[in-house]
Amino acid sequence: LAFSKAPILELPIELPPRRSRKRSRSLYLQLKEAIVDGRLRPGLSLPPTRTLAAALGLSRNTIVAAYQALLSDGYLSSRHGSGTYVAPVTPLTKFRGVKAVNAARRHPSNRFWRSTAASVSKAFRASSQNPRFNFQVGMPDRTHFPFETWRRLSARALRAFARGPATRMHPQGRTALREAISKHVSYARALACEASDILVTTGAQQAFDLLARTLVTSGRTTVALEEPGYPMLRTAFMAAGARIAAIRVDEEGLIVDRLSKDTRVICVTPSHQFPLGVVMSLSRRVALLEFARARGAVIIEDDYDGEFRLGGHPVDALKTLDPGGLVFFVGTFSKCLFPSVRLGFIVAPRWAMTQLVTAKQVTDFYSPVHAQDTLAPFIAEGHLARHVRKMRRIYDERRQVLCNSLEECFGDLLQPILVPGGMHLTAWASSLAVETATLRAATEREIQLLPLSSLYSGRSPRPGIVFGYGVIDKQAIVEALALLRRSLDRKALPD
Ligand SMILES: Cc1ncc(COP(=O)(O)O)c(C=O)c1O
Image (cartoon, rainbow, N blue to C red; front, top):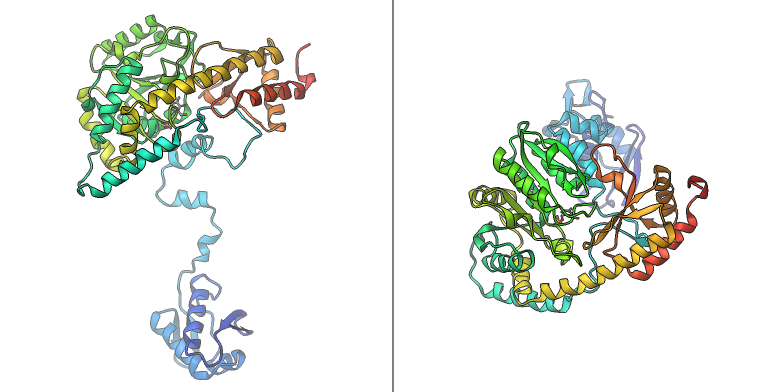
């Protein structure tokens, strides 16, 4: 490309080599772009063809052809006797300086999605940092997963898919998977249900979204959420326009007495409260079900890591006590397999299934079929149960090591809430100063920790730290806690 400048227009113009037939076309395009983006403003007088031809070293015909094309497209106008002008085209540059936020306000854009939802969900996105010691909450260990088995089942599913008829899939989910899930929850969670009671979802998050869409009337329905609790669940209900009531949790779980009479949906994690870990007592479960029955409310049971209860007495799902039609049980394969499989499910009361299936269909038609057809035999042939048994042992050992290290390194400064099971543990900090100093030292030492306060919607009444041990091994736990203790700013600590 030859490069030359039209001094008269103050416009850098690049042109193809001399004998190219495309020179006029190229000039046309460059002038047009300059007009559209505002570098050549409306009303500007263009140089006579002869002058521009001389300046660019082109033939006059080339310029005339370009001007004529611009005239006929409406980018230029000519007044007899007084030359050629840039027509009044709205230059796009007008918008260039406008910040994205302002532009979003000017155009149809929902404030909730623009600001509130964005600020909550940012914390749950992938971070580019790779911490040296990763206590990330909610992330399971993949290194022990039987990928070879998964690969074999996946290949089998693909072969069957390639041979099978091209039929439309049902939004409720593949029958074989729903049958496998119904057996799995009956065995693992003492929950009697049939394949027809199950809706396959894209993880628990979609289950929350579908339940919020179908149960909430915007601005009218009061939804009680645990405080502290899982922010992504809260966001799904806020998006649906729910009136949110944050209800405190104590050592027996959600404080049922604090529910207001107008509450219509209650979301709980009864098997392993997120994030405190406590198990909802039997008397609270009964009180909660009684409340729902009396008030015409429903309960959403988020059983995100129900498979990983350890030691102590196994806790049945709340849904096993459901007298009928009150409890939606939400399960996920994000913890017992891995989150990227994006499969979960709802065991729903019969009266609600049709509306949920319709909402699922409107949202994404159905969940990816190949993943469903791989997961179904993975469960049915016993691989899931085997993997869960193995992981329980591993997480249990890590938990023990974490508790011992906390005790050894921090004593009373960080006191773990001792409840069996799961893949995270919350520790109360003895003061806000201890929490702040610990988090600061963790950042300096590349140790990823979660402040408990980030899981409250309001002010957190007690400082604390949440430790996930899904992806960190025993040795790293010991090392990280010793390092953290050494790095604590002694001045911030009590004598
Ligand atoms: C309390 C709780 N509920 C539900 C989920 C949902 O997981 P997913 O949407 O990956 O199934 C998580 C994930 O971390 C969680 O911590």
